Image 1 (cartoon, helix red, strand yellow):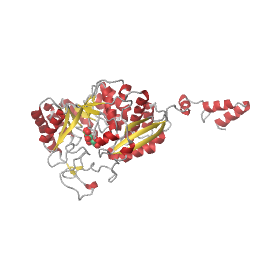
Image 2 (cartoon, helix red, strand yellow):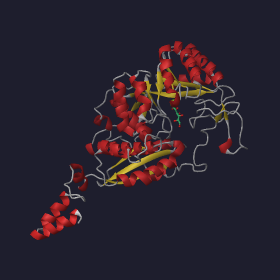
Image 3 (tube, protein in one colour):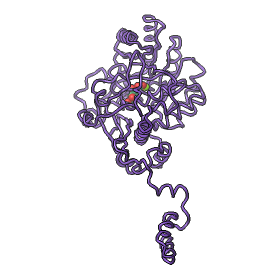
Image 4 (cartoon, rainbow, N blue to C red):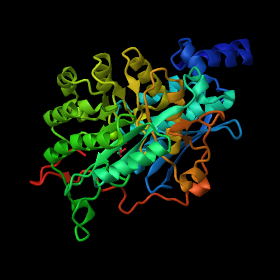
Length: 460
Ligand code: GCO
Ligand code: MG
């Protein structure tokens, strides 16, 4: 006899219906008393997740993924960023098909617990797609907590450590003169930090053109070649010879009163990256970013003793094993993880705390393929993190500001958070639908196209 029937017949003997109810509530299917966890899971949490929705939108022509978590309290919902622009539809499926049924009915206020259970809910973990999906949900839960408490998220994190968030923007061009002009423009607008990238003549150079994708489209027209067979041409040696000259030019023309940054974007062999990082040391960069690919982080041990150039790394990281040794070994100066990928605010605040003990500063990834909700999350973290370093910033176009009322504001090169509860940012679903993501082709095909002249594939 199963335990429930046994309890029922025992209770019938006494004729006590109340006893039946009591015994059913207190024991599980195997006849043993419920554990505390089992008892708790039978109750209905007062504030529950009632729905999890995903929105894909592209108000700046970049595919963004936004997650909305709804609750049983009318009008109370939260927003999170789950953007993985290269695989937006995969994240949408991860949230709608897998996370939504897993989350409905759960206690909205148990953010850490939800994080831990979602993290292992697929058994295999620590990757993009599932990481983005978890990040979106996690941020939305923090947003709800802030709204419920009537406090901005930075206050939930311990309050402001600074009044505003110092940022950097991107100066990029075909010539040194173009880059110089843009640096001057940013300085005139009040910025103190500028990333400089210049096209290597004849080569498809990261960061030297528009803001979309990695490669700039290549020098040669390829209109007659199908998208999936196009080639962007790249050679590392001319690039590592050019970048020190770019730094020399800007220092000579503009002087010392600007902090200069540069993104190597993991696309040169490690030993050339080591040469480059050493060559620019005399121009005092604020940081050199991604000298190595995530697969080559072992080279930091070789690089570190050779130079005092500050090193930034991490936008491609998924897994704590990728950053713990770099941080605890004091091998980098800035951690640059993509908060919408590693697990949202819950994971990022732990990373920041780890870094604090090793004097590694934060420089969260903040490109165009982070939604304004993700940027708002970055800003709240930046305000409340003692070991904050710098924030990569984005100027939101009018469509983004309309779709996301309450975007963080940029003034004099500083980001300011709105002081509204939660992340202080909203989402206009109807308007977002007017900026559908491009599905033909279904993803940005300019990744995985970079090749040496001899045809060898190169990391982006
Ligand atoms: C940076 C980056 C980005 C990435 C982009 C990939 O801002 O430092 O390297 O521009 O290339 O986010 O989609
Ligand atoms: Mg980068």
